[in-house]
Structures are given as C-alpha cells and as structure tokens.
Length: 237
Image 1: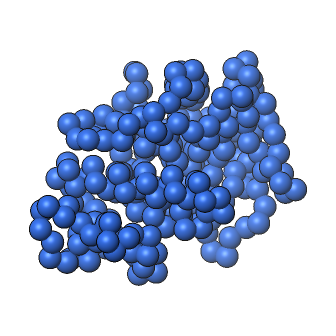
Image 2 (image 1 turned 180 degrees about the vertical axis):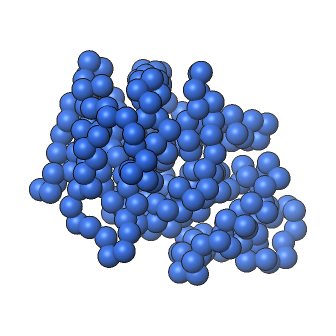
Image 3 (image 1 turned 90 degrees about the vertical axis):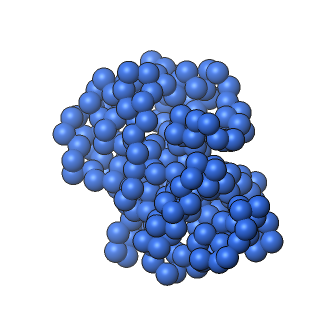
C-alpha cells in the first residue's frame, strides 16, 4: 500500500468523522482487509502491501439514519477529488489520481437499475445484492482517535467467495478469492473456526452453495471441513 494512498484514506475517514457521518458508513472492499491488521495481531495475516487498491467502497446499510447534511463532494474537493458519472444512468463516483470512492446501498426486493439518491450527502449510491451479508455482522476498529465500522472478517471472507465468481475481470476475481482464503486461514489461526461455521450456517442455502463452489476441494480442504463438518486433521487446517 503506497503511503500517500493510506494517508489520503485516513484524511477522508477523519473528515467523515468530524462531519458526523462516518458512523453511517461501513468500509468494505479491500480496504476493509487492510484495516483488519489489528484484529489479526499475532497471526500470519496478509501482507498489507498486497492489499493495494485504488477503490474505496462505503456501504450505507440504512440511509434513513443519516441525520447530518454534508455535501461529500465539497468536503473532499480541496483534496483533489472530482465528481464523475459512471455509465449512462448517472452513478456518482469521487475520483482522485490515487483513490476512487464509491457509495453502495443494499439492493432489496426486485432491485433497482438506477442510482439510489442520497440528497443529504450530495451524492447517489449503487444498489447491489449480497451486501446485507456484510452489514448484518460488523466490528469496529480504532483508527487514530476514531472508530471505523468494518464487516466481521468471517462475513467479509465468505462474501468474497460469493462475489468473485460474478467478476468479469479475471485479475480482480483471483484477487478477491485469494484475500478471502487468507482471511479464513487467519481466522482459523486465531482460533475462530466456530465463527466461520456460525456465519456460514446463518446464510441461505443458495449462498452456502456458492461459497462451497468458490473453494477448491484439493487446496482448501481445511476450510471445507469446517463449513461442511467434515473430519479433518489439524495438519489440513
């Protein structure tokens, strides 16, 4: 992770905190994995440098709870962020040479094929499926003098095993899968195999099938053993 990217990310989080809106956001995507470092202290967790990414994704699981009116594009303008529109439907992203910010909401029911307006923030969001998996179980990590909300690592990793199969770009699919496997291994190393199993059991059968499909029966035997209650030796984990 380049230092300037990290420092810029911290400044964004700091400004959101001071503006009173950070608690409305769940930081997801590869930057979540980056900030899990303290959670996995004492384990052989991912090399932070391997998590370098330009994209920062913020999930807003309940837009009705946003109380403060903060024009996010204006809040970040002096940092060099400009508002751009993605596709022909007008999805808003905030672009900087080093980072790209996008805001997401949960897709419900039949879903929508247009931007979800967030007038109090001066932006709109993309509605996507499977995100309830991330918002249903979260943790808070201390960053400087404030706290950032992240998906529980077990939820994050199993979610990655679902969505990597939907990726159009092969390089991103491989990256998502690798991060998921490494986080699950770190959870096992941390003694939280039961947490992985509990989260897996809590999701719909169709989602469970997608998770299992995303695992390699030869390379990921230990993880499959935990999910499917298979008898495996400790050496396989």
